[in-house]
Length: 339
Length: 218
Image (cartoon, rainbow over all chains, first blue to last red):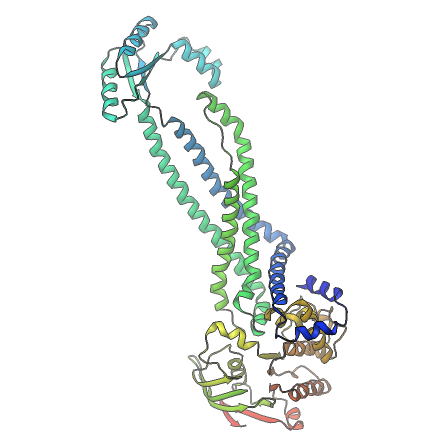
C-alpha cells in the first residue's frame, strides 16, 4: 500500500477539477467505474505486496519454499516414475510370446530341427531361434559385461526358441494348452509365457500406481499443512494490522486477500522449483536409463514432464497454496478479536 | 443514534459486567462515559463496536439492531463508526496517509476520492503536509490526531473515543475536545470514555456514569 499511495499523492494535483468533484459526490463511494478500478487496485496491490513481503524476508521464504519444493518434487517424481514404467509395460502388452529355454545338451542342429517342427504347428505364427552365440554376442554388446563374459570358459547361455502364437489364440486356455505341449517336449528346459510376465508386471504396476497416488495425496496434505502453518505465523506477525483493519470495518474477505496471495505465491514458486528439481534429476538419469534401454532393444525413452503435466504441476501447487491459506484463515480470523 | 435498552453482558468467568444498562444518545449529541476502572466502560464500548454480543437486551445503532445481527453484517455496521483509542492503534509501518486511508480502501473508494478525502481529514486535524511521515516520527498529540483523522475520514455518523486524552497534556486534550465539538456541530454523535474529571466538569456535556456495571447517572 505504501508505494502505491505515495505514487498517488505525487500524481494527483493538489486541487481536483470541480467537475470531477461533483460527479464523485453523487454516490457514497464514487461511481461504478471508480469502484471497479478500486477493486482491481486492491487485488493488484495484494498480489504484489504479498510477493514483496516474501522477498523482504528471504531466509524464511527460501526455507519454506525449499521444503515445499522437495515435497512437491517427490510427488511429481513418483508420478513421472510410474508414467515411465507404464510406458514399459504398455509396450509389452500386446506380446503373448512364448520363450522356450532349451536344455544344455541340445545341439544347434537339433534346436533348428525342433524350431522347424514347431513352425508346422497350426496355432503358431512365427518362430525365431536364438543360438548360444547370438545370445552371447547380444549380451556382450549391451550389458557392458563383455570382459567378464570373456573370462568364462563356457558360454552359460542356453539356446532360446521364441514362439509367437497365432492371434486366434487370444483366450488364455488355448495359450496355456500350447505352453503345456511345449513343456512336455524333452528338449525344453523351461517354457515360459511372456504374457505371464506381463501380467505380473502389470499387477506390480497397479500396486506402484496406487502407491504413488497414496503418496501424492499424503505429500499434498503435507504441502497444505506447511503452507497453512506459514500463513498462520504470518497472520500472527501481522495481528495488529488485522485487528485494526477489523475495527475500521474490513470484511474477512478484505483481510484474507493478501494472505491468500501469499499462499498463492508460495505454492507457485514451490511448484516451479519442483519442476526444476524433477527435470534436473531426469537429465542426470537420462543417459544411464537410455543405455539400459538399449539392453531391451531400445523401445524405451525416458519421458519428461510434458507441457500439460508441467502446467498441472504448477497449477496444483498454486492451488494447494491458496487452499492451505484459506482453510487456516477461515479458522484463525474467527478467533482473532481485538481486545 | 445509539440506543441501549436493558443491556446485560455476562461473562461465564466473571458474571454480569453490565446490568440493565439503558440510555439513548440522539443524533449530534456528545456524551462522556465515565466510571471507575472495571465499571464496565470497555465492555460497553466493545458492545457498540460489535466485538462482543450482549447477553440480554437490545442495542440499536443508527436503526440497526446489534445483538442478533449476522456476523457477516458486522463490518458494514463498524463502517458507521469511527473509533479513537488511547494508544492510537496506528500501523507503524505505514505512512500517515496510508493509515488515514485504510477505512476508505476497505470501503472500496477509488484512489482519487481517497486522496481527496484523506487530505481533507488531515487538514481538519491540522496535519497537512505530514502525509508521508511515519507515525513514530510524530509526537503523541500528532499521532492521536492521525487516529482522529482515520476515524472521521469515512464521515461516519458516530464517533467512539476510548480515553482519547489519556496520554496527552491538558492543552492538547483541549484541542482534541475542540475537534470533537466541531464534529458534533455537523451532526455526528460522539461518545467519549474518560475518567479525566477536570475535563468532564470543564465541558458541560452529558455524562453517563457506570458503577459496577450499572448506569448510575445519565
